[in-house]
Structures are given as C-alpha cells and as structure tokens.
Length: 284
Image (cartoon, rainbow, N blue to C red):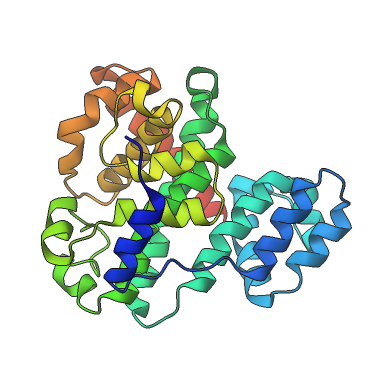
C-alpha cells in the first residue's frame, strides 16, 4: 500500500489543494529536539515566539487530562508537568489550528471541537489499554487531533465542501466515495500528506491514511492498533451525541478485537470511558 508522495502532491496541486506549511516555531522546535542536547528554557523560548500558539497551548495543557489538577502558570511549568514530548504534540495541534484560517469559521470551530473530543477519548483509551495495545496516550492524542486534518484543508480549497458534505453538523462527516465523486480527492489522502509534510511519526501518518479502513496488520504494522483506538474513540463520540455510526457496523468487531475486547464488552467499556471523559471535561 505504498503511496507515491510526489505524484500525490502533484495531483493535489492540479486540484488547487495546498498543503499548509509548518510554522517557524514548529520547525525550530523540531530541530532543537532532534539534537538531544537542549535545555527546557530553550524549548520554552521557542514556543514563546508565537502568542497564538502559546494561548492555545495553555488552553490545551490546562485540561485535566494533562495538568492532573495542577495550576500551570508558565510554559516551563507546562513542559515539566506535561512532558516535552506531549507538549510538542500539543504545539503541533495548536500550529495546525493557527495555520487554517477562518474563511469557514463555523465549520472549522465544529471541526476542532470534534477533533479535541475524539483525541481526548483516544488518549483515555490508550492510557487504559497501554499494556494490551502498546500505544501511549500522547501518541493516541496526536493521532486523534490529526486524523481528519485533511478536512479543513479541503474546506479552504472548495468553498462548497462544507455545504455539499453537510459538515456544519458535527455528527455528519465525510464519506470517502462521496468526496471522490464530487471533488476527485479524499480527506484521508490529503491528511496523510499533511502529516508526512509536518514530520509526524510514520505509524501516525499511516493511521491517518487508513483510519476509515482498519487494514490488515501486515500492511501497516503498528498503525492498525492506533486506527482501532481512533475508531473506538470516534464511535464513543457518536454514541455520546446519540448519532448512528454506520462505519462501526463494518469494522466494529475487528476494532474491539484489536483493543482486546469481545462484542459483549462494548457497552460497559463505553460507559467507563465516557464517564472518565465527562469527569475530566467537568473539571476543565
């Protein structure tokens, strides 16, 4: 299932779709962390260059999922409590939100709200099932935030994208076949290229590309478990908002098996995860 990235990028250019560039802050942070020889103060200094990213980082990091009830008053405190790796993930999420402008503000607000809910649920599931799945909460959160990142890119390219696919309804999300017919491109492929361009881990990129498919492990390796976590979080999001999840009928049994459950365990586990999610939301 290899993809010719250069050819794919050229095809997107033909359609007028532009992959958003990484902000300078994110590039500088990546270069610093690659060196393995840096001080926390230097990381904080780089992040402080962009007030918009700082504001979003504080909002994300103060969530009980990361702060664990502690008051975080500075970037260095966030780095110490949350951890540099997870802060980097949060900066990536904040950077993407800042990169996508507000030309379709209502739909984008709905998109980010949905992405954050699914990402938080994915992190809770990964935290709970780490011994079974070997996927860590920060990895699941990153994949949850980015798994539909092709959607806002297509929103900006095609003014009718939101209207045609009814995306202003938070519970109505893209159908790949419908996208292909109407726009000759789909958000999974676009999201994969965004993730690759932004330097996300390979298995996260693969999970973004195949998050509607749950492919066989031999084709994408560790990404299949990450896809299962994302799909379980997405399904729980649908259940929480009382909306039918048609994809679940197709892949639900395999998702449950991949995460280490049987079909009879779904309802109890849904109650457990959503209760923890809602408790953290109330505390935020």
